[in-house]
Length: 118
Image (cartoon, rainbow, N blue to C red; front, side, top):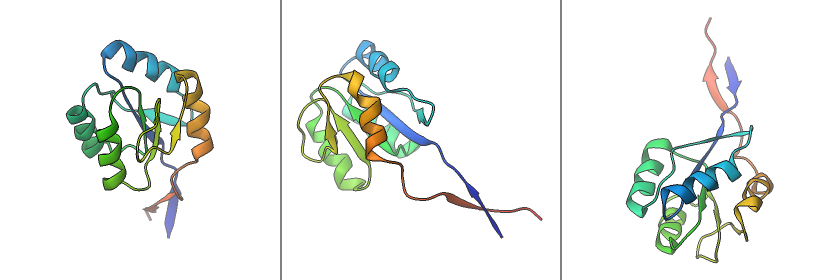
């Protein structure tokens, strides 16, 4: 018998500097998901994606290549950007719109099944 385990939606915020990452994280945080450490470079973001396996990516700044790379590697990832970019799931005008936009994009499919002890 397996026990259904809900998993937290993990979100990675990427921006061009630490101050903007911090502001974006504050605007994005919500009870229904977990924010992973933010990134300020494409390489840092890709490394965090490999380690943290986020379900969603919030990108503010000139990261078109990152968005395209992530979309190619992870077709189901929700990607919210502040400007049109190939592969973005949604574009927002300000950080204040990120939280509701992520909610509207939905959660990853289904619960994770874990074996029950006993």
